[in-house]
Length: 598
Image (cartoon, rainbow, N blue to C red):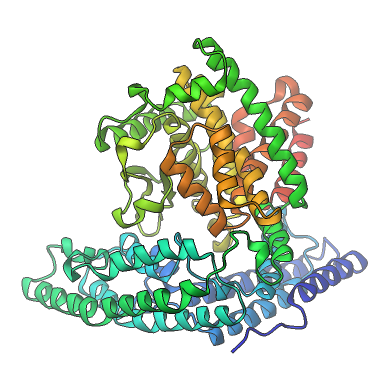
């Protein structure tokens, strides 16, 4: 089976959106026609609700993670038939939503409409590139979906456990569907690089060879609510372990064999995405989807080179203050500096927690609105640590009563560096991802989809901007930590160079590693995992620096135009209070806010 082309999906999306815009300019509804506005508003809100319900039903794992248990015993349908059906459904939603004239709507309503139209158009355009044919790499895939899901669910009653057992029994079907999609990918020459798939195989084998009781899929059995009788607990335990041992683990083992025998040998040799059919066109699409700005690979590559040079100038000044003549000698000293090595895994965790606590106390000086949901700093799942970054954030859910988590990597702790920990704490925790995600989820009076939209340039741009905020309010008192801040910024500037290098200029993996070593102080495990991440996830790494630079430019513009009227708390609230959005829409929003403040 093949995904339907929908008469060139990208062309259809562009044609629909342009025709809607043209029609609305020619025949706007009268803004004072209250009945008409009310009818159109009701129609649009009904579409928003229909879409949200359909999206949750299509992704029951996502629904469960949000605390919506209506489909708690179901898992996603990964078949090509289901992919086709959802794409057609999105096209129908786009047509209906685009036909609703937004004259007389509030700015928030217009924003909601435009955001969803853009989402649909992006999905339809992405269909041309058959992303479903490459659903697995060393970072993502069916093999890690359900072990990770267990950590997001609540188990308060017998039905929660029975639903989990039903899901476990359905996992083999999901593996079979994904395997079929990957087989089609082999035929179409759309396969990840061989060496990344070998890493994937290692992770799959680790999960496949665990004892049922040691599997993360069995984690709900570790603690039962007191309200569940002992007899029921025993039944649940028996059925869960039977499902894992007789259904799930054999599915993992079959998948491992497929990877080893069929998929890895078909893997591509060149790391860049440009080596697959339509790869160059696909990479340009990814650049636009991830940055939400109209930039080319060459433009971004040059921006990266410029930012690397700027960061190095500031870093050299710190190195010289500490008595080193150049960056090379300073970086060499960092590798053997015991001050920069965590004494233990717990000490590493405590360092992250300390920086989060320090920033928490400063938040009222930076924001008028603070998140209600809490943040926990914890160890990341062990099976992910080997190929994961130093730390990452996992959003909480108010409806599921789940806090946000800053996951800390304990793999090879003696080789870890404390140099970037302060910057990462602000990025992944506060005022970065946790504050932004929590406030987005706590919005009132907006459609549900807006509480969970994740435009990478906005989300990651804000998080990288948050690292700079720590400097603005007087943190990074330790010069090594301040160097680490710049090194973290350099890290994101390097991404602009190496991501475009490998995916548009045919760089080798070793060229990427060499560039990192020449321009950063990142420890070896991080360099290796980061390079592999960019190869597996083209374009995503570009969003951080592009988003940060856009927010900084908007802040500078607001300061220049407002002068003494500029309020950093009001500016920050304006940026984050409406949830994530494309950067061009954020620019329009902030420029309008500046005008009103004048």
